[in-house]
Length: 583
Image (cartoon, rainbow, N blue to C red; front, side, top):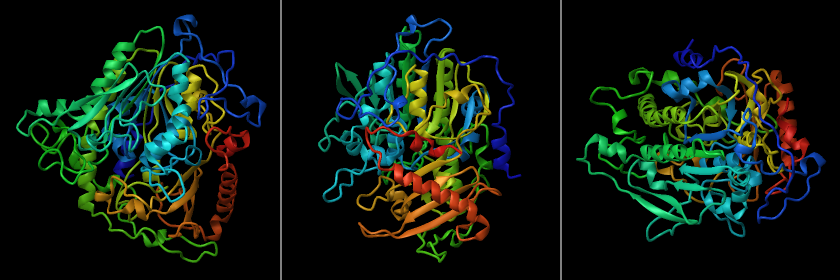
């Protein structure tokens, strides 16, 4: 068994089911969901979806046995599953809480974050790329511009939680292009639905030297976080590190609101382990993935701090599929002939992959410390969630450095949940980041809004054997107009990845690419991978007869998904479309 598999096995919980039951009452009363312009949502097709439970009473008015829980969401940036073994706090969370086979609907930062907060697919949010990338005659394709232009702030789950009586707080990375740049971009508007809003702007990718915000009387005020001198002490430099600033804000919020009559919702969004985006780091010799100085090689840790795993033991053996030839991943046409390959960029060397993996493991130690402090700071009536906006590949399956594919490296991320009444152990459901918004709504005593495509995970909290969903859908739009912030270090790999729609079952992945390079044209090609023998994309077998039945099933699922893609923005999602993920 590969060493990485042994370590993953260490995350499996041996806990026996708890006798506690999740006592979450769905409160009576109804109101209209908030729409894009603040008005009511159009009536959906199914009567049971027309109403949304109204805001519940304050915590003090509920029974002592079942108060609405506080909720803390920790959302990592570009976290890959190979790093989970290096996080002591995350491993503790996995043992004490629920762990899921979890995916993101697009392995791209802004797109995924928009989907998480709205419970909607990219075709619903209109957020399809990291940047605005305005095409002639069209609105913005992505970034903060698209998120705000298409009404996603009003549909974000924090808005409904705040109206339901929750104090809502945000700390860290918000959305791509939600920025302040002195003399270039003014202070952006305040997103709706946040009681406290500490956005940390994008220069924090480099770890030091950035601005953050504070909400005062409904307006954003700036706070400057200067880069300490290179001659400053390690402690002084690390106190100004972006991860430490995010931690300080988060713990301050928890201490301020812990024990209040009203519950709270807090999103903590560190930049780690995302790479820096400037050619030169904040300090001479900074690695591409800049960890806090206390975690870098030197002093008491000559090889660096990689948590429970010695850094020197991390290598390409922890990256399943590394070194595999990529010729057998070539897409196929409908007739089975080879189509144009899209993975044509430089391969990542084993030395580079190993170096980056160790730097990333050192970088996530700041998140792990924050997670452990959060778990100590919250009370027993708090649900803590750990996940990521997307995964990241380091040379697997012949790829380079980056994200954006529907492969396991990029779309599969951790989902660990701990809280009152949640039975520890692995779950059987296939889940996606669309499911978090309706989960938070149900925890708050609300009926999920009719425009959500996701489904609440609350029923799985007390029943680890529940297994109703067996499919996850992905959709990705290639950004051929504007450069992604990562381009300087990925060699344009994200641009090479074509637009696609894909569906994942428990045993396989079917991808339908559009390889056309000209707008308004379509060039369809296919990939299918079986996961029955290994959990990585070894060989495209879409044209093999022995997989015909599974491919036929998944093609039918994609056809049904295409039909449901007409549902956008505030339009309610039919039960037929929401049930596409069911087995």
